Amino acid sequence: MTASPLPKIKTAEELRSRRWFGPADLRSFGHRSRAMQMGYSPEEWTGKPVIAILNTWSDLQPCHAHFKTRVDDVKRGILMAGGFPVELPALSVSESYVKPTTMLYRNMLAMETEELLRSHPVDGAVLMGGCDKTTPGLLLGATSMNIPAIFLPAGPMLRGNWQGKHLGSGSDSWKYWDELRAGKITDQDWLAVEGGIARSYGTCMTMGTASTMTAIAEAAGMVLPGGSSMLAADAGHIRLASESGRRIVDMVWEDLTPQKIQSRAAFENAIAVAMAMGCSTNAIIHLIAMARRAGQDIGLDDFERYSRKVPVIGNVRPSGNAYLMEDFYYAGGIKALMNNIREHLDLTCLTVSGRTLGENIEGAKVHNDDVIRPTSNPIYGEGSLAVLKGNLAPDGCVIKPAAMDQRFLKHSGPAVVFDDYPSMKKAVDDESYPFTPDTVMVLRNAGPQGGPGMPEWGMLPMPKKLLKEGHRDMMRLSDARMSGTSYGACVLHVSPESWIGGPLALLKTGDMVEVDVASRSINMQVSDNELAERRAALQAPEPRYERGYGWMFTKHIQQASDGCDFDFLKTDFGRPVDEPVI
Ligand code: FES
Ligand code: MG
Image (cartoon, rainbow, N blue to C red):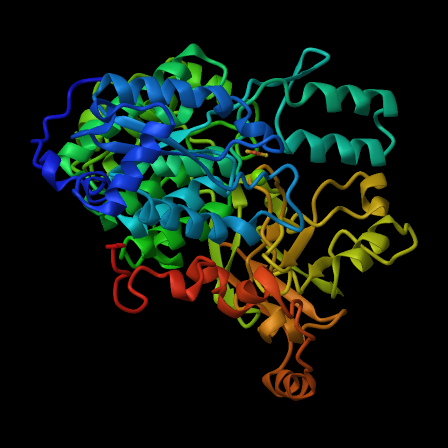
């Protein structure tokens, strides 16, 4: 990496950690003696930036399994550059295991990150994350705390393998599950898929939420150049870890804080990159939350604007048809992709490298132009996401036209409405249930409060009957999210959600629903009078939680269109929190 040109403006006397270790008083005596209890001599920390390494490793976080030892490489870098590393474990928010949904805990990690950094003697932070919610969780907290921070992505896992075919995380589980249900593959096949789909540590290697969010983190300036496409199992990832450690020490001396990096233009760059990557729909929620923490008023309209002008050029599943993140890395990775869309980027934005985005991607080359396409030969001409509005979703909802059967771009069909997941699940397995290819299957009470936590239920399972008839897509509608590895004609994030009385709560089975992606509209063909009558009869549901974290969550969670942050975590909510003094 080329050295940062930024001046070192902070002195050792100005280090935040000095308030803990410096003074000749009883409190500091305690801090110093306890550091010595751990075997450190004062020479090892005095006058040096103390760097927190927030490690989201756990035994139930397979995507971060390598973080258990990778953290040593980060420490090596920090030590080499003259810093003092301290590892702080943080919530691992495992997409693979956490129930009911990790989205319930993104904000908990954000709070934990902010408070870990605030309450400890640290001057800067390396944020180790990558599995879906960990990227926004760590960045949200670090942004509010606003001390120098650098994000180290876990990196995508190797391609899956089954009978010589490349398997993609998530996408191929859904695909082969449908094939199994349709009787096209055997139980034996299915078991082999199970053993072959996740072959190494690292995050999902499709363009799911993990790869989308780490790309966004890099485009917004928070990852070292190219870091977000570095594979977890590549030795380059070890070097990236060490380099991130070396770099954060200088960032402390340069006082290069997230606020100096995360401008509005930086988030617009992130949106442009997300669109070009054929991003996960979850990106919208997280990016809005992240931008607003940084004081940038990014909203659904910004996504819509970029979606209209930036084509999908990253040919990675599920938006793309063949490739995975391993191929993307070999083809040149994110730097090459950004180079191809440079006319949509603000190349003057500052990044954690101390250099501009333009300098970071200088000379980046595409090595396979089927994987990273030129804008003249995109996977999908318009951006991968579309924001729809109408009487079903006054505050907006989202669909991913790049990853669905194109005949549903304009669709009108009768709704079949389910109030909860179990009754929907029963119906889709019941071959006598009257689904038709035109049915608009609806699930409600799956939003931020209703889910609770907006689970990834949005790719509602295809009815067995339609699968057997040969159908592989249908129009689906919910206030849930869907996994970034999912695909299909699924309208998601309906805002406001049905649980709090959004119009989705008024829809009935048999009502005609009209979706028109070209005009960005979604409406139920029900008269205003009829809707008013239904609203008058609507009953508020029983609260999901009466104690604990869930209670707090439902009291303070904002709607999807506002990024699902807690209202009280917004950086400008009330006066700033004081630094701890005593
Ligand atoms: Fe961790 Fe997909 S399960 S990134
Ligand atoms: Mg996911």
